[in-house]
Image 1 (cartoon, each protein chain N blue to C red):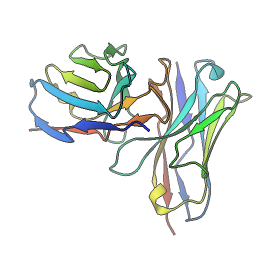
Image 2: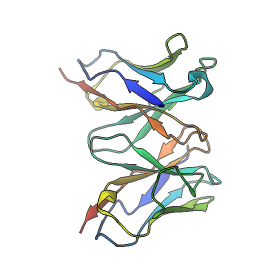
Image 3: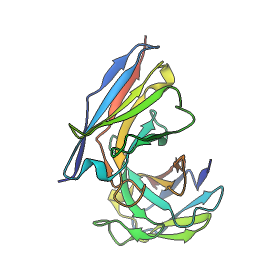
Length: 107
Length: 118
């Protein structure tokens, strides 16, 4: 089974900051990677799929990059509504797998 | 509007079985796999398995194999997830989810809280 490892597990940032979250797969997954945002008490929301394709309606300050085993999610200018937990997910092979999450908190 | 609407919260005793439903609307049920994801309190997301509503084929995560059964009823456009031999560690929110972009999930149900307690 493919394991997904995110770093950091949490970070503190201020509004306006540039934030980068990393996701590493235990084996190559091509570009079969998605990123989600989850707020407390809510279902996750798809931000990016195919490693770098922005889901419709998602602000352009979110971007994704990478292929193979190493991926990044970047928020170019953090807004107040972006404080949440972010997960990566591989969908290259079964079992599907999520990273452990990165909590973005207010500094 | 595409929607997945799940059944309500459940409280079960250890050893019992829970069955959660996920009613689909706004798209053709048989066109996309339906997945189930577990989230324990304060924890991350864990994929449980999927059903292909077209033919009923299933794939389960090893962790849940033998205890989980995922089905699809095409007459009512509803997917089900049944988890048996419940234990306290199964206390969690369970989500159904589907994806129009392979197995990236762009549509989620609202979640169903299952509490396992004696």
